[in-house]
Image (cartoon, rainbow, N blue to C red; front, side, top):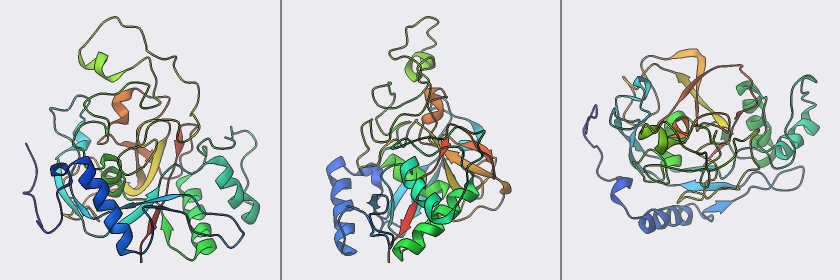
Length: 296
Protein backbone atom coordinates (compact mmCIF):
# COMPACT_ATOMS: atom_id res chain seq x y z
CA UNK A 1 0.00 0.00 0.00
CA UNK A 2 1.31 3.42 -0.92
CA UNK A 3 1.06 5.91 1.93
CA UNK A 4 2.99 9.07 2.71
CA UNK A 5 3.76 8.04 6.27
CA UNK A 6 3.81 5.04 8.58
CA UNK A 7 0.97 4.26 10.94
CA UNK A 8 1.37 6.46 14.00
CA UNK A 9 0.37 6.77 17.65
CA UNK A 10 -0.49 3.18 18.48
CA UNK A 11 -2.42 4.34 21.57
CA UNK A 12 -5.25 5.17 19.18
CA UNK A 13 -6.99 2.17 17.60
CA UNK A 14 -6.56 1.64 13.86
CA UNK A 15 -10.20 1.17 12.97
CA UNK A 16 -9.80 -1.09 9.90
CA UNK A 17 -8.24 -3.65 12.27
CA UNK A 18 -11.41 -3.78 14.37
CA UNK A 19 -14.57 -5.81 13.87
CA UNK A 20 -17.91 -4.12 13.36
CA UNK A 21 -18.92 -5.02 16.91
CA UNK A 22 -15.68 -3.59 18.30
CA UNK A 23 -16.28 -0.33 16.44
CA UNK A 24 -19.81 -0.10 17.86
CA UNK A 25 -18.44 -0.84 21.33
CA UNK A 26 -15.85 1.93 20.92
CA UNK A 27 -18.66 4.36 20.07
CA UNK A 28 -20.70 3.28 23.11
CA UNK A 29 -17.71 3.53 25.47
CA UNK A 30 -16.89 7.01 24.17
CA UNK A 31 -20.47 8.12 24.77
CA UNK A 32 -20.27 6.88 28.37
CA UNK A 33 -17.10 8.91 28.89
CA UNK A 34 -18.99 12.06 27.95
CA UNK A 35 -22.09 11.15 29.94
CA UNK A 36 -24.38 10.91 26.92
CA UNK A 37 -25.86 8.22 24.69
CA UNK A 38 -24.35 7.27 21.30
CA UNK A 39 -27.23 9.13 19.61
CA UNK A 40 -28.57 12.31 21.17
CA UNK A 41 -30.25 15.66 20.46
CA UNK A 42 -29.67 18.90 22.34
CA UNK A 43 -32.59 20.98 23.62
CA UNK A 44 -33.18 24.32 21.91
CA UNK A 45 -34.20 27.57 23.62
CA UNK A 46 -37.04 28.02 21.11
CA UNK A 47 -38.38 24.62 22.15
CA UNK A 48 -37.93 21.26 20.54
CA UNK A 49 -34.79 19.33 19.76
CA UNK A 50 -31.72 20.10 17.69
CA UNK A 51 -30.75 17.70 14.85
CA UNK A 52 -29.88 14.21 16.08
CA UNK A 53 -26.15 13.58 16.47
CA UNK A 54 -23.99 10.45 16.65
CA UNK A 55 -20.83 10.06 18.74
CA UNK A 56 -17.67 9.46 16.69
CA UNK A 57 -14.78 8.07 18.78
CA UNK A 58 -11.09 8.86 18.39
CA UNK A 59 -8.95 6.57 16.26
CA UNK A 60 -6.81 6.12 13.17
CA UNK A 61 -7.79 5.49 9.56
CA UNK A 62 -6.49 5.71 6.00
CA UNK A 63 -7.51 8.97 4.37
CA UNK A 64 -7.88 9.15 0.59
CA UNK A 65 -7.41 6.37 -1.97
CA UNK A 66 -4.78 4.73 -4.18
CA UNK A 67 -4.75 4.18 -7.94
CA UNK A 68 -5.95 0.60 -7.36
CA UNK A 69 -9.40 1.83 -6.34
CA UNK A 70 -11.74 2.11 -9.31
CA UNK A 71 -12.72 5.74 -9.74
CA UNK A 72 -9.57 7.04 -8.03
CA UNK A 73 -8.54 10.56 -9.01
CA UNK A 74 -5.18 12.32 -8.40
CA UNK A 75 -6.72 14.73 -5.88
CA UNK A 76 -7.44 11.78 -3.56
CA UNK A 77 -3.75 10.96 -3.16
CA UNK A 78 -1.45 10.28 -1.50
CA UNK A 79 -3.31 8.01 0.87
CA UNK A 80 -2.35 8.93 4.43
CA UNK A 81 -2.62 7.52 7.94
CA UNK A 82 -4.52 10.10 10.00
CA UNK A 83 -5.17 10.16 13.74
CA UNK A 84 -8.42 11.65 15.02
CA UNK A 85 -7.31 12.46 18.56
CA UNK A 86 -10.50 14.01 19.90
CA UNK A 87 -13.96 12.43 19.69
CA UNK A 88 -16.75 14.51 18.19
CA UNK A 89 -20.41 14.18 17.26
CA UNK A 90 -21.82 14.52 13.76
CA UNK A 91 -25.34 14.71 12.37
CA UNK A 92 -26.97 11.35 11.69
CA UNK A 93 -28.65 13.03 8.71
CA UNK A 94 -28.06 16.01 6.51
CA UNK A 95 -29.89 19.12 7.69
CA UNK A 96 -33.44 18.96 6.39
CA UNK A 97 -35.65 21.66 4.93
CA UNK A 98 -37.92 21.61 7.99
CA UNK A 99 -34.93 22.03 10.33
CA UNK A 100 -33.60 24.93 8.27
CA UNK A 101 -37.09 26.45 8.29
CA UNK A 102 -36.79 26.99 12.05
CA UNK A 103 -33.65 29.02 11.43
CA UNK A 104 -35.49 31.02 8.73
CA UNK A 105 -38.32 31.82 11.13
CA UNK A 106 -35.96 33.05 13.85
CA UNK A 107 -33.54 35.02 11.68
CA UNK A 108 -35.66 36.13 8.70
CA UNK A 109 -33.13 34.57 6.35
CA UNK A 110 -34.72 34.70 2.91
CA UNK A 111 -34.51 32.37 -0.08
CA UNK A 112 -34.38 33.87 -3.55
CA UNK A 113 -37.78 33.29 -5.14
CA UNK A 114 -36.38 31.94 -8.41
CA UNK A 115 -34.67 28.99 -6.67
CA UNK A 116 -36.09 25.56 -5.96
CA UNK A 117 -36.70 24.86 -2.27
CA UNK A 118 -36.92 21.49 -0.56
CA UNK A 119 -39.65 20.63 1.94
CA UNK A 120 -40.10 18.46 5.00
CA UNK A 121 -37.50 15.78 5.59
CA UNK A 122 -35.69 16.29 2.29
CA UNK A 123 -32.17 17.72 2.56
CA UNK A 124 -32.09 21.50 2.46
CA UNK A 125 -30.64 22.62 -0.89
CA UNK A 126 -29.70 25.85 -2.66
CA UNK A 127 -27.88 27.21 0.39
CA UNK A 128 -24.33 28.54 0.41
CA UNK A 129 -21.58 27.44 2.75
CA UNK A 130 -21.91 30.84 4.42
CA UNK A 131 -25.60 30.08 5.04
CA UNK A 132 -24.64 26.72 6.53
CA UNK A 133 -22.26 28.52 8.88
CA UNK A 134 -25.00 30.98 9.87
CA UNK A 135 -27.26 28.03 10.67
CA UNK A 136 -24.48 26.48 12.79
CA UNK A 137 -24.04 29.75 14.70
CA UNK A 138 -27.80 29.98 15.30
CA UNK A 139 -27.93 26.37 16.49
CA UNK A 140 -24.97 27.00 18.82
CA UNK A 141 -26.85 29.93 20.36
CA UNK A 142 -30.00 27.84 20.69
CA UNK A 143 -28.28 24.96 22.48
CA UNK A 144 -25.27 26.45 24.24
CA UNK A 145 -23.07 23.94 22.39
CA UNK A 146 -20.60 24.47 19.56
CA UNK A 147 -21.83 23.40 16.12
CA UNK A 148 -19.83 23.79 12.91
CA UNK A 149 -19.22 22.27 9.51
CA UNK A 150 -17.01 19.15 9.56
CA UNK A 151 -13.53 19.18 8.11
CA UNK A 152 -12.93 16.95 5.11
CA UNK A 153 -10.95 14.52 7.28
CA UNK A 154 -13.68 14.34 9.95
CA UNK A 155 -16.31 13.75 7.27
CA UNK A 156 -14.41 10.90 5.61
CA UNK A 157 -13.49 9.31 8.95
CA UNK A 158 -17.16 9.35 9.98
CA UNK A 159 -18.33 8.04 6.61
CA UNK A 160 -15.89 5.13 6.54
CA UNK A 161 -16.74 3.98 10.09
CA UNK A 162 -13.70 1.69 10.11
CA UNK A 163 -13.85 0.56 6.49
CA UNK A 164 -11.13 0.89 3.87
CA UNK A 165 -13.27 -0.09 0.87
CA UNK A 166 -14.57 2.43 -1.70
CA UNK A 167 -17.93 2.53 0.07
CA UNK A 168 -18.95 1.82 3.63
CA UNK A 169 -21.01 -1.02 2.16
CA UNK A 170 -17.98 -2.67 0.52
CA UNK A 171 -16.30 -2.82 -2.88
CA UNK A 172 -19.46 -1.86 -4.74
CA UNK A 173 -22.99 -0.54 -4.18
CA UNK A 174 -26.39 -0.54 -5.82
CA UNK A 175 -29.37 1.78 -5.68
CA UNK A 176 -30.60 -0.28 -2.72
CA UNK A 177 -27.82 1.22 -0.58
CA UNK A 178 -27.42 4.75 -1.95
CA UNK A 179 -29.23 7.34 -4.07
CA UNK A 180 -27.17 8.07 -7.19
CA UNK A 181 -27.80 8.37 -10.92
CA UNK A 182 -28.71 4.77 -11.68
CA UNK A 183 -27.65 5.20 -15.30
CA UNK A 184 -24.04 5.19 -14.09
CA UNK A 185 -23.60 2.31 -11.59
CA UNK A 186 -20.26 1.37 -10.07
CA UNK A 187 -19.61 -2.30 -10.70
CA UNK A 188 -20.87 -2.26 -14.28
CA UNK A 189 -18.53 0.62 -15.13
CA UNK A 190 -15.66 -1.07 -13.31
CA UNK A 191 -16.18 -4.21 -15.40
CA UNK A 192 -16.48 -2.06 -18.56
CA UNK A 193 -19.80 -3.57 -19.53
CA UNK A 194 -21.07 -1.94 -22.71
CA UNK A 195 -24.69 -2.91 -22.12
CA UNK A 196 -26.65 -3.22 -18.91
CA UNK A 197 -30.07 -2.36 -17.56
CA UNK A 198 -30.20 0.09 -14.62
CA UNK A 199 -31.58 -1.60 -11.51
CA UNK A 200 -33.49 1.54 -10.57
CA UNK A 201 -34.97 4.46 -12.44
CA UNK A 202 -32.68 7.51 -12.41
CA UNK A 203 -33.64 9.87 -9.59
CA UNK A 204 -35.01 13.32 -10.37
CA UNK A 205 -34.23 14.80 -6.95
CA UNK A 206 -32.83 13.97 -3.54
CA UNK A 207 -34.86 11.55 -1.43
CA UNK A 208 -35.97 12.09 2.16
CA UNK A 209 -33.13 11.59 4.62
CA UNK A 210 -32.74 8.20 6.27
CA UNK A 211 -34.37 6.09 3.57
CA UNK A 212 -31.22 4.05 2.88
CA UNK A 213 -29.25 1.84 5.35
CA UNK A 214 -26.89 3.60 7.82
CA UNK A 215 -23.23 2.84 8.47
CA UNK A 216 -21.90 1.22 11.67
CA UNK A 217 -22.01 4.52 13.55
CA UNK A 218 -25.64 5.11 12.60
CA UNK A 219 -25.01 7.78 9.95
CA UNK A 220 -27.36 7.97 6.99
CA UNK A 221 -26.75 9.12 3.41
CA UNK A 222 -23.00 9.60 3.69
CA UNK A 223 -22.92 8.14 0.17
CA UNK A 224 -25.15 9.77 -2.42
CA UNK A 225 -28.35 11.85 -2.14
CA UNK A 226 -26.65 15.29 -1.87
CA UNK A 227 -23.07 16.52 -1.86
CA UNK A 228 -22.13 17.95 1.55
CA UNK A 229 -20.11 21.04 2.38
CA UNK A 230 -17.03 20.70 4.55
CA UNK A 231 -15.09 23.54 6.13
CA UNK A 232 -11.88 22.49 4.35
CA UNK A 233 -10.37 24.68 1.65
CA UNK A 234 -9.79 22.91 -1.65
CA UNK A 235 -6.39 21.37 -2.37
CA UNK A 236 -5.31 19.60 -5.55
CA UNK A 237 -4.02 16.61 -3.57
CA UNK A 238 -3.47 15.38 -0.02
CA UNK A 239 0.21 16.36 -0.10
CA UNK A 240 1.11 18.28 3.06
CA UNK A 241 -1.84 17.07 5.14
CA UNK A 242 -1.04 17.13 8.85
CA UNK A 243 -0.93 13.85 10.79
CA UNK A 244 -4.09 14.76 12.67
CA UNK A 245 -5.80 16.09 9.57
CA UNK A 246 -6.27 19.60 10.99
CA UNK A 247 -4.34 21.46 8.32
CA UNK A 248 -2.66 21.41 4.94
CA UNK A 249 0.24 23.40 3.59
CA UNK A 250 -1.33 24.28 0.21
CA UNK A 251 -5.02 25.13 -0.15
CA UNK A 252 -7.24 27.61 -2.03
CA UNK A 253 -9.54 29.48 0.35
CA UNK A 254 -11.89 30.53 -2.49
CA UNK A 255 -12.98 26.92 -2.98
CA UNK A 256 -14.27 24.31 -0.54
CA UNK A 257 -14.22 20.51 -0.51
CA UNK A 258 -17.58 18.77 -0.79
CA UNK A 259 -18.05 15.06 -0.15
CA UNK A 260 -20.50 12.23 -0.69
CA UNK A 261 -21.79 12.41 -4.25
CA UNK A 262 -25.47 12.93 -5.08
CA UNK A 263 -28.63 11.73 -6.81
CA UNK A 264 -27.45 13.57 -9.93
CA UNK A 265 -24.01 11.92 -10.15
CA UNK A 266 -22.54 8.54 -11.01
CA UNK A 267 -21.92 6.09 -8.16
CA UNK A 268 -18.15 6.55 -8.53
CA UNK A 269 -18.48 10.06 -7.05
CA UNK A 270 -20.14 8.68 -3.91
CA UNK A 271 -17.00 6.79 -2.77
CA UNK A 272 -15.67 7.67 0.70
CA UNK A 273 -12.49 9.14 -0.78
CA UNK A 274 -14.19 11.09 -3.60
CA UNK A 275 -14.16 14.86 -3.34
CA UNK A 276 -15.45 17.75 -5.41
CA UNK A 277 -14.34 21.36 -5.71
CA UNK A 278 -17.07 23.95 -5.06
CA UNK A 279 -16.90 27.73 -5.01
CA UNK A 280 -17.27 29.06 -1.47
CA UNK A 281 -20.64 30.65 -2.26
CA UNK A 282 -21.90 28.06 -4.74
CA UNK A 283 -25.49 26.86 -4.56
CA UNK A 284 -27.03 23.80 -6.21
CA UNK A 285 -30.03 21.48 -6.09
CA UNK A 286 -27.74 18.57 -5.19
CA UNK A 287 -25.70 20.29 -2.47
CA UNK A 288 -26.47 20.38 1.26
CA UNK A 289 -24.71 19.91 4.59
CA UNK A 290 -24.58 18.23 7.99
CA UNK A 291 -22.93 19.57 11.13
CA UNK A 292 -20.40 18.52 13.73
CA UNK A 293 -21.11 19.16 17.40
CA UNK A 294 -18.00 19.42 19.54
CA UNK A 295 -17.86 17.43 22.78
CA UNK A 296 -16.87 19.06 26.05
